[in-house]
Amino acid sequence: MRYVLGSLVVVFLSACPSTKTSTTSRLEAAAGCGPDGVCSVRIAAAGDVSLPAPGGQLVTYALLADAGYDAVLALGDLQYPKGELELFQQFFHASWGQLGDRLRPVPGNHEYGTPGAQGYFAYFGARAGPEGRGYYSFDLGPWHFVALNSNDGECKTVGCGPGSEQLTWLEADLAKSKAKCTLAYWHHPRFSSGPHGNNAAMEPFWRTLEKAGADVVLTGHDHLYERFAPQRADGTPSADAPRSFVVGTGGATLYPLRETKANSEVRIGQELGILEMTLRTTDYTWRFLPARGGPPLDQGSGGCR
Image (cartoon, rainbow, N blue to C red; front, side, top):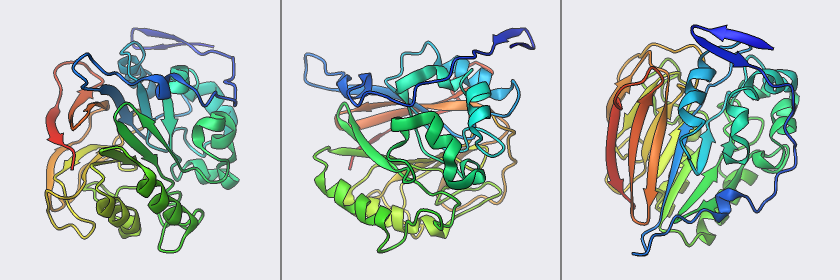
């Protein structure tokens, strides 16, 4: 199929992705180490991506297509309205789906619009982690990544509270990791100044990551961009806690900002875009790149704990 979006001509590809992805992918192979022994990788992230029509997902994909990112973290609600496999194959695949094994997704609530997120797991295959579970981890360069499943936002479908299989797995995974720096990502934010606001159901994730020394948390769900100062699970500011970003700007209709939450440092509404991060051996930098072009709307750096 052929569509015109403004002056952009888009051809939708009919081929469907294979559900079998080699575990020895370019992600695991990308160490990015220079002669000085300093390693770095470049990633991008956003969630809330693809509508069942040509739209914003095409302009955010244009930022990703030829940028050479080592990984792209897809932060849930990747295909609206209910994550149907046919729509993933028709619309998501014609944009972000072209990134192939660079994509490392997590499910959002819209994926669970189909029973058990069947369309999501069928489309992504091994890249989504074990079917029905939707959480997994991997190492990329000097960093450890943990992809978690916040499912419907209340952890009813796949539990995330104390004693749950997912939280037990997370504790064990973090204990095994030898990486100095850790990034976790899922769909529903613990902290947000958007319409959905703060989500107390995500506290167990946060407390576990905080205790283990994790550095960065990325989420979507509210369709806006927001950066928070490092803070504890209860919202107490602390340099010895993760820094978080809400990046629900991947292509879906944007949301207005609401009441500014404590420790919010930057809030950007009504701008599609992606978060770009360079992750080094002991630190990281970030830039929020708007889909309309121009200079970054937010940028900065931080050190690993």
